[in-house]
Length: 198
Picture (cartoon, rainbow, N blue to C red):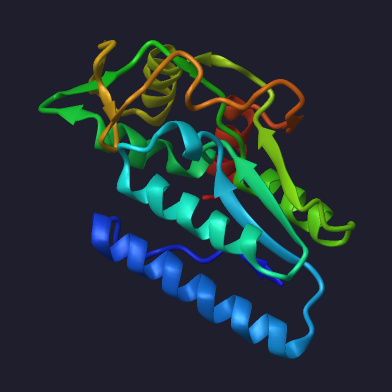
């Protein structure tokens, strides 16, 4: 069973209710059906960003999965290229976007899906694997380049205290540890293909 569900609300109580209730329901149904491998998509850094209600809820989801009787695998992915505009909007401050000078390693959604598929057809890990994009940059520098490529005129301001959906970031909090599985698609290539498809 592959779980890539996501909460319709990021409000602290609502997102916690969504992930704990849906996960309990799924695990109960899986146990009754004899499912032998539960695969869940999560986010790199959930355990390091506990100020964020969404990440607290993802941690609760992962705990329920790990404590169940069903063999499991967790796929922790970095942020998708598809979320770049939304992340920028989350850091918006008038006509500026505030971003921290921390490491950032986003990846294409297609490569996240491929990673989840590979894990799903393999043996349960009873643990997690981290997947990330091929390039590691500073977050502020990435968004400066990305917004310019998107034609977004907002100025990206380097701010060590800029919050990422409520959390202040440390140097490595949004990137994987050593040993992550890396994708091959770079943002500039992904963006070129996306624009061509439109």
